[in-house]
Length: 478
Image (cartoon, rainbow, N blue to C red; front, side):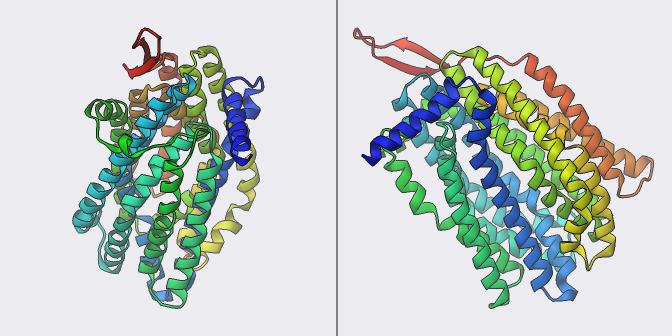
């Protein structure tokens, strides 16, 4: 029967996580859909950029490109709460599943969904109201400012469905199902590309078309993933109406693990707002070089990001199964894999970077030259960024989310931003000093990450207690 085959497939994934001797191959296999999903997201970002630079009248291209690149950290701040809940929920669910307590995993998934929906409403409304003030504080003005406000306010509409999708992804990746989120992400991205092109090409909507294409792409999958969450059956984490009833104890437990990640993401994004404000002071050419270089670089960093994400699942489930040695072996295997992939990917893209950047910045020669230089430093530092991603996945999977907070803050606030300020205001260095600051901060983050990992407690964040005479067990978070 189909349901039996699906159950067997899920059990096979559990064996890959908990039993397979070749850990590196298991990580690579389960990380592949995450990598492909992230690749499509980054490719989608590049498509949006391509549409903006090719379907916008020439006199408006620079302002529209800046409006697409500059607000990203602002939008990311709104995502930080959902990302924190998603990370905390995934860690708890993975440990429950590793210990074979599916009912408790289902309950956490229900609480996670309602928290993400509520957070999406609050963050979307807040960003809509505060967008003009934030953009002014960042130094935006003129036509670019008007485009930014239009773009951000339209994107606010996507917050509730997107945050709920984060909850769905947490339930699936924590169980090792990375394929279903990949399929839904593919639907989102292809819908986004088609709608954005139609809005910009045939309806002449400009930057608003790019924003509405993204929003509608995220909305279109809501009925699909809600059905999957409620009708997943025995093979997946599945919620019921009773799981959506708010339970103060469960919500407090989620908050305890979520707040360091959410706070880390928010402060990191706020740091990038400050960084982008500094970049804007160098001119629109530097902003566009920085944004375009980051979008292209993300394509090469994606495998490491996928491996980092699946590391959290391997660590969480093996800790839940009290298999601490395998959890640590998973981290070592993930680290080696991500570094090797980063080296190979960087070596392939390095000689092609000028050709790739020219696709987007051919009409902006100053930005093109800066972006070519910037990408050299990005690609050379890919192994360091890969190490950072694996450490972050490790801390999140083990439930040591406070280390995620510490590492993210040190990387940006202790190294990168102070260095940019010193290079710009003390030594009066040109825009290229931004790349030097990023390289140094990545070295520092890799070193600090190793120190924090040595202090990482690989003990379950759940406790098994006897609840009745027949020794039915209930898991309660510590």
